[in-house]
Image (tube, rainbow, N blue to C red; front, side):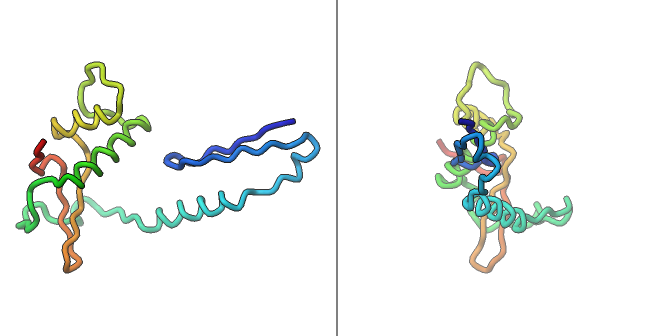
Length: 139
């Protein structure tokens, strides 16, 4: 018996492991669920826009949303950054024995070094971009 395994792209949770007899290996069919995952990944890439440096929102515009980071934004930023760190992203602070990605993300947030921009959508369809270093963080 020969076992083959397919591991999903980074960020996917499930994996598929199929076992075949040596004679049945050539007759193996593709798993239909994997096609759905690949199509979903292509859809995500279509929704991403990369703007030139000067084409984003102007930093000197008067902002109307609160300068405080909400608890929901904090949770999202910490979770996203911890996932990035767990997937070997560069760490922006000096480590002092920390190994837990969430603890490292918290340390980055306290020192205002997280390289994430929060986009707040307004009711009229416009938005405001805030860097994590611009927001007031309460503990």
